[in-house]
Amino acid sequence: MGGFLNTLGQKLAERWLTLLVLPGALYLATAVAAHTLGYSHALDNRLLIHQISAWAKTPTVTSASGQIILLAAVLAGAAGAGLVAQTLGRAAEYLVLAADWRSWLWPLRRFAQWRVDKRGLRWDIAHTKYQALRDQAALTLASQGIHVDHSERDTAYRALVRIAEIRPDRPTWSGDRLNTVSLRLQEELTLDLARIWPSLWLTLPDAARIEVTNARADLTRATSLTGWALLYAPLTLSWWPSGLITATLACAAWYRTRTAADTYAQLIDAAARQYAHD
Image (cartoon, rainbow, N blue to C red; front, side, top):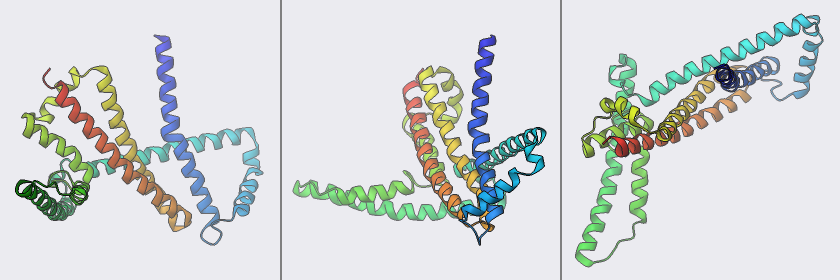
């Protein structure tokens, strides 16, 4: 029992260090650089080194008690920044997946409805083009026995699924990707995923459960990058390189969220189709 608790404590400490403290410490370092350099000396490394050296020589920092207090303050600040970023990431995940967007407050609901309508119009146009190419290819094959080159049709299909696999019902691609799984299971297998999922989860073998859990954790980590981007954004007001960091994090969050949502949706779909009969 003691060995298990020690292992559990080590894993929790490792996760706390990896997910909160290290990214938070990097954020604090960036905030210090932004405060010290500003716009006029944004890339002046000498000024930054000189200022840090000056701080390091102060009596408060050179004393043992001062170093302990400083270390505690840095750890607390880094962990606090990490918690804020994770909270913002959770909010971003809620908005991105938008499972219950029709129950949101009026301003958000109206914006979500506008997004759904706009994406639906784009999907209708792309679907009409793709369907016309399919019908033309089928007609040519039936009347002349000739297979039409499918490269244009494939391009049209990729343009269609970049919007959504089925007509959009949610304001984001990631939300629609997960919603598509539920709709197809309902249509093809008459399975209500929301209703059967708790029972299905209990019957999944450990390997499948681990894969689904890891995919869900990847989605959470991806959306947490949005939280970090939101934290770095205000630093741009005093230090322009922070804008590059914010843009990089935002792009990474967008790409990783879509990728993680797609992987998670595929695993849920596969798990339901393979194990729902149990």
